[in-house]
Length: 237
Image (cartoon, rainbow, N blue to C red; front, side):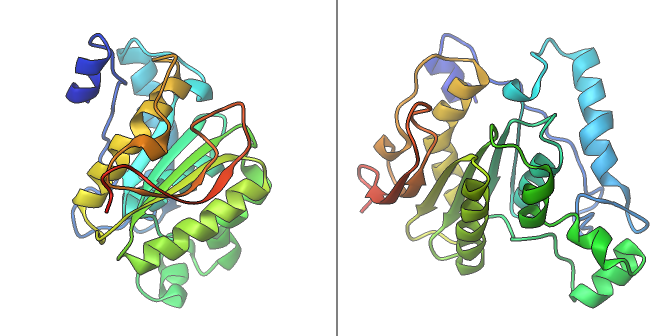
């Protein structure tokens, strides 16, 4: 954010990094469960309430985004589509298709009292159909070598486009499930996100950034429809 602020007269987003795990060995599934407590409530009620009281921020979903990497990426798209009144923008890096912890049968028994319907309500693709909003933005990315996240990105992107969301999907060539992929993707996506948050009136198209391969771009120009295909950013070979 320091680099972004340096290019934009000192202006940058307010970024909050809440700890929804409690321990590096935990996976809360970003849901309210008997295993690790009410993670979803913490992230969608307690933290936003504190932000509004403690920080000089704009309110309203159009000015708020949720982002994360790996389990946090899954969490960001999961919470974003379940709480469109809170988050107008989602930026998941290397997301899973759905929250996962061990075998599905054991997870449903431990985390959801054996209630499969309660678990399915946390799946982003299903939540999109019942709770997602067409005015939301979903900016997906993955390292090209991270085959599981690449598959999830394509499926989540198709699902989001089907309900009318603005969607971008980019891969980072030669990278796997790592922070190198995150940093490269974030550099490409941040200008467009900040424009949409109301921080800056202009933004370079995603494809003009280095080190990425654009699979779909429905966000760089808010007045046009989705552009699909494969477009390499400069110096990406």
